[in-house]
Amino acid sequence: MPLLGFGTWRLRGSAGYEAILGALQVGYRHLDTATMYGNEAEVGHALRDSGLDRGEVFITTKLPPGKAGQERKTLCASLRALGTRYVDLWLVHWPPPPRALAPVWREFLALRDEGLTRAVGVSNYSIAQIDTLIKATGAAPAVNQIPWSPAQYDEAVLEESRERGVTLEGYSPLKGTDLGHPVLTAIAEKHQVTPAQVVLRWHLEHGIAVIPKSERPERIVANFDVLSFSLDPDEVARIDRLSRR
Ligand SMILES: NC(=O)c1ccc[n+]([C@@H]2O[C@H](COP(=O)([O-])OP(=O)(O)OC[C@H]3O[C@@H](n4cnc5c(N)ncnc54)[C@H](OP(=O)(O)O)[C@@H]3O)[C@@H](O)[C@H]2O)c1
View: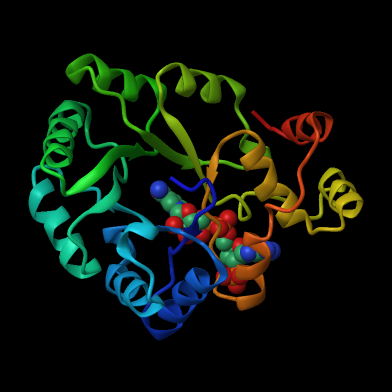
C-alpha cells in the first residue's frame, strides 16, 4: 500500500471525477473510497480514463455500517461500481455491535480468500476490538484506518498496532490540525514548504499511511509533493508533543 494516498470523501459527480483523475495524473497511486461516499463509480471512471493499468493503483473501499450480514452483496456492488474484479483493501467502515464483530470479520477473511479483495482491514476500531478479531480467527486486520493528526498522536496506539502487525492509516490529517500552530509554521519555514506538507510528511516519518483529500488542483499537487524533503528526529518529536492525548 503506498503510504501516501488520496482521500475522496465528498468528491462526487463531475467535480469529484475531475479531482480524482487529477490526482492520478499528479502521481497518486492509492485512492480511498467507501460505499458510503457514493463515489465508487467516479473513482472507477477516473481510473479507466487515466490510462493506468488496474494493477498500478491501490484501491480501498469500505463496508458501510448497517451492512453486517450483507458482506458479499455489498462488496460485489462496490466492484461493479468501480468496474474492477478486485479491490486492494476492503475495510469495515465502523465497528458493528459487539456480537457481530467476529462474524463480520470471518466473512471478510472468506471474501479475501476468494480473491475479491487482496487484503482486509478495519476502520475506527479500538485495540480491544482488534483483539476480539484476533482471538476469534487468529487473523489480524492488515490496516486500521483511524483519525490521526499531530493533536491526535497516540504513541500507545501506534505501538500496540505494530505489535499486532496492524498498519495504521490516518484520516482527516489536515482537518484535525491547526495549520497556524507556531511549531508547524517554524518547521515549514525551515524546509520552505507549507504547514500542511509538514503534517503529511510527519505521518510518513512515522510509517503511518495518510490520505489527504482536496478538490483544488494546486492542493492536490502540493499534498503529493512531500517526498522531496524529510523531517529530522527532533522535528518529529516536536510535532509529536502537539498531541492533546
Ligand atoms: N474511515 C473513516 O471513517 C473516514 C472518516 C473521514 C475521512 N476518511 C478518509 O480520509 C480522507 C481524508 O480525510 P478528510 O477528507 O476528512 O480530511 P482532510 O484530508 O484532513 O482535509 C480535507 C479538508 O482540508 C482541505 N485541504 C486539503 N488540502 C489542504 C491544504 N494543503 N491546505 C489547507 N487545507 C487543505 C480540503 O479543502 P479543499 O478540498 O477545498 O482543498 C478539505 O476541506 C477522506 O477523504 C476519506 O477518504 C475516512
